[in-house]
Image (cartoon, rainbow, N blue to C red; front, side):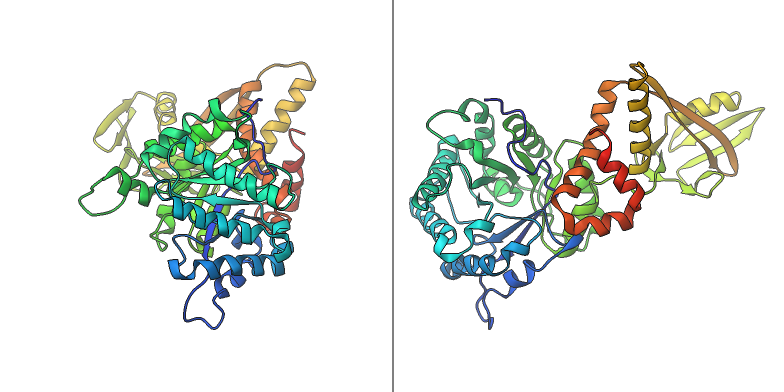
Length: 436
């Protein structure tokens, strides 16, 4: 079988939102489940995870499994995202694995009325590839027990150990064999907290390492196995800028999804991977990109790490500790092109794609796209412009953010009004049609 393509209806997942399944001392132990299943629009995740593992106390997990079945049976029809409960599991504990199996049986029991709206199960603390196959076999047994189609329940795993990270490299040779149903794999989710513990890693502050290699390996494995990669939790819930930066860094390595701990993080993670509503210019001020201030007739730099002045008939440009000299405005424009870049809006991307599609229809294989602006630094203005050659490869690469938008539009009708408000109805309509 070919496994270099997505095997599930969703091709992108932006948000993975966990909720405790039962809490002691509450009049209704399922209160947080009942609140989460009512989320709509940008506050609702692509994947909701009733968390019957870490987020729920061990003595409450039996009740938690009952709560999942009850709440999903009552309200699951109307929830706009997918529902993937997390059950207990551990690579070194047969009794824990058996308890997770019991919980899956209860949640999936058709007599409890929830299974029609349960899309899959999330399996934590997996180990080597044989352990993944055990989890897959348990899910297959659940399907056989209740007469469900084999492979109809998805499986997502959380990468929380070195053995699980190494197992990702064996997926391609294992998937499709007659002795497993690993094609059911949906999400590969990083769990950096337990991974840090498993690796015996130490930092001076006690904080988590960035684990960039783990995120890259998970993204690569997901791409090779037809699954979707998701980053772990960002626990500083007040640091919106840091969360956004993490999402941006992940997107650059093909990891669109991230764990969300609050509805506020869900909103940020739902919106951040989408192209901006308005395009904007950036300038590199000695290793840090900042947005230029759009003042209509010029893109103005207002920081203090870049200086520009006319001197001796030419121009002196200082970027941090680097001093550059340009003899005239053309040479200055060439220098600045190394420091400025444009972030296109969804409208810009669609315009360019429509222009390229028209050129292809007319028999052209490649066309040049020009981007120009007037940049102002310390009162000195200079016109910059760059040409980018568009061919079929460029077109396909820039289809990725558009395909993300289309996936969101197709799978999340509850977000249609939000998207129209962000981009305008005209841009939304064009973006859903381009490339089709």
